[in-house]
Amino acid sequence: MTSFGTRLRAAMDERGPLCVGIDPHASLLDSWGLSDDVAGLERFTFTVVEALADTVAVFKPQAAFFERFGSRGVAVLERAVADLRAAGGLVVMDAKRGDIGSTMAAYAEAFLRKDSPLFSDALTVSPYLGYGSLKPAVDLARENGAGLFVLALTSNPEGAEVQRAVHPDDPAGRTIGARMLAHLAEENAGETPMGSFGAVVGATLGDLSAFDLDINGPLLAPGIGAQGATPADLPAVFGAAVRNVVPNVSRGVLKAGPDGVALKAAAERYANEIREAVGA
Image 1: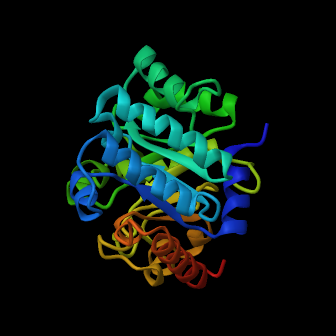
Image 2: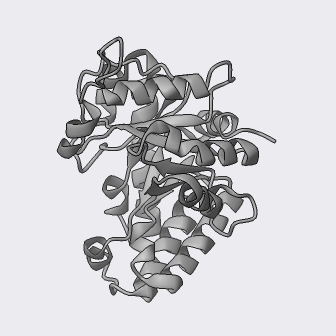
Image 3: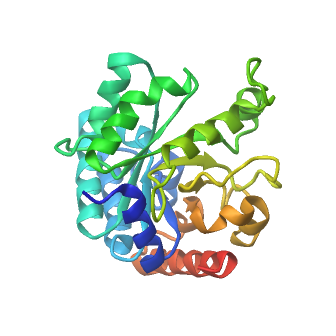
């Protein structure tokens, strides 16, 4: 079984290190001239899939924007995941699941079990019930050749309240975010070309030299485009770990729709700018 880290490295090398978010929120549907209902959701989603699935390396559907339409919205998400993966794209399901015990195991089974209709190459998860609470997801991801992206240093201002707090029992006085990175480095130890357990680290955070980002795994970096960061900022933010960065662009690409040719051109422009910035 090929690991997620191996598949991701190959996809990034072949297609470029770009992740396109699929975020069909109401205002974006409206800007495309679509209704805020399942019909609009479906039109939006499959326009993106048809335009980009065979050229972009990674896609990050935001599960909440599909779940808000109930079972019919989830059915659209299931089809999108299957179509993206069939076209060679990797799917990172942005669901930010986090719980304990059997509940965490159930979340993991929904997205990380091979025979699940929502099986994705990787899943975003929240470790703030303790990193150990993620063990069911870690174990199932390993078993099924999938990966995780753990919230470590997020770009939202509120995140610092937890992530920059110093752990009271850490002998080195590390912050919670730094401890999450250390846990991931342990998960990825010895893996080649890189491990399957990544961190979410915002591209808008500026100088992160105080944190050890060399986790031998991918760094999912939201914030490019509408949130203010640019591809040229990546080397300064991520330093020596920049080659493992998976920059996420959502509105910067999606605002080019509903024209499929314009979507493809926007994605290609960002992919080329990121390649140049990171030396890929």
